[in-house]
Image 1: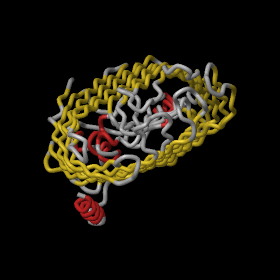
Image 2: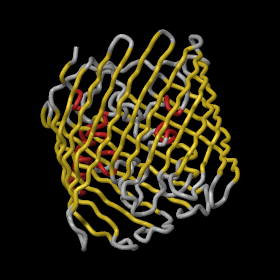
Image 3: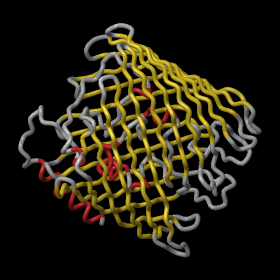
Image 4: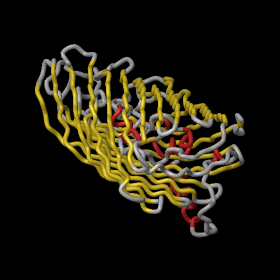
Length: 468
């Protein structure tokens, strides 16, 4: 499978030099979108600069007629897991069958977007472990309302899976997910600064199943042609189903207020204030509250390059803990560089902020990096590369039943996809994952583990049904 992926990547990139030059006005669509008209909207330069408002590489930004589409994805391959507390890898076969559904309804003053991807993974036996079946589901609902200079966004994002959505290991890796379902993201994006701040981002920990749900309401008011203000409120839950490794379940409440001013055609500057409150369900674990402020600068170059830089102070307080209580002064920052032109889509981002601790800790000072690249090589070939790194250091030291220290996770991988027909395609993907974690009271915890995932599969999509 690795050889197949390497050959496919080499063959695909070699075709790029032979492809005819592309006219700027030509529209890019994914295989699932080839029969739905699309265009790229102009960005509203007066929109507020806040975590929730930032676009992400790979997120669909096309404007299409109202439609409904669905698809089926079947894949098979192999993955490895560590044995015991060492790093001796054992291989197990894995296969999955997934279904996807996307509905988009556009009206004169509103837009509705519903996206679902879900199904089951069949894991073969290895060592003394028997075969087992796991479910995975992700559902995003997004409602936009516009009235004059006022815009309202209501969104909800639900996830149930084994591995974290950071890296998308449950779907074969981030690259495989972006090629197979990249056009089906709505609501709260799974891998952006918004997901980090609102509590939707989760990293895997010992392959523990978990549930997250994030509900958001956002209001934007244009003050002048060049300035606007926005307010966002969010409530999220993170629950580790079964919780065999004593992870920290928590609820998170978030508010954010932003002001933005358009300095000129290419430059914007804004000020953002945010408040987060983390409440944990375990006894003896306290309440963590953070207040942060950022000055954010955004620069655009010919609607192809987008640079965003932001930084500011962050004050964290811990109360009601059996461990250490008190206040901490930290720094919060974000940086993003994106490029999109013709066949290329590139992105790099960094986010430093307070998170819920990814279930490992009660609160964590976290740094999250992302890299991504997508390329349409020819009419039939597409390729994607993705990588990411997340690290978190515990804030609430000495809390009952939870470890202290640091946790880090890294992933890297790639995927290729070939269109075999109007609604049928094949893909191959590979991803490497590695995590380092403190074990605390969990007897089944492995301090360091590695994972390799290699898949090949097929996607079939119905002809998009127009809802006009």
